[in-house]
Image 1: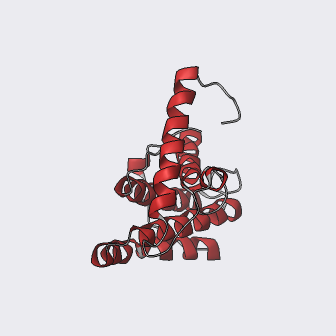
Image 2 (image 1 turned 90 degrees about the horizontal axis):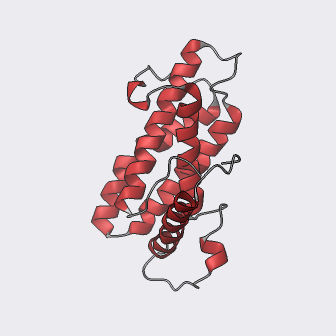
Length: 171
């Protein structure tokens, strides 16, 4: 967060979750039949196919609900797709079950990692292109977009949990 209002204990806990998640993800995101180079800088980057990037995307969703003062579990609005970014994101969300089946069938955790990275990337595009909390957004658009955010949060949280990677509500 930009406020830097975290205690030393909270910062240490966040650093542990980010660091441990980064190492786990770096290992799980690679096809087990290929070699990879252990690189701290690449693992800990907040850009690209890394755990910190996914954790940041998850945190961004949590911040929207905090700013909106809305309980995520109450988001059950009908999703009304209006923008291409919404369509791409919802389409990716619908592929989660197939991804889990492939993960199980192939015993290939990198498949889930790739899915989560693609989901986070599409979420970031959605976040930039589709305002949620601005004044010119209709109540229906807001409800629909919050419902999409809730589904993203649930899916990302579940997927990261399957990989043994902690999520954070603030960063």
